[in-house]
Image (tube, rainbow, N blue to C red; front, side, top):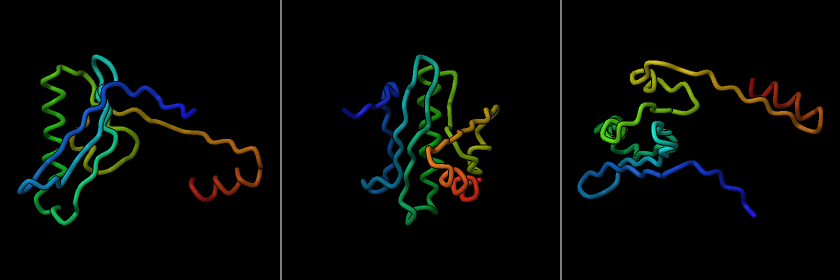
Length: 111
């Protein structure tokens, strides 16, 4: 049986242009005070319209409307995240493979 984590209440947000979805986001309201910004996507052919910025603004409005205290933008150091954050937490992940050669490959390939 597949073990799917309970990520809380899913929230789907969209931005439309002429009735067509040009940006969307699947996030999760983790508890009474935290929203996890998880899976954004946009149609790059509409990039000049800034659908990602419009989408993020609508998500921030949702957070304010529902009185959530924390907007967790998840892993990654994408530039746009720095425009919206006032605090950060360093995440780290350690992967240990059973075979020693895989550990060497992982260290050189990803670190």
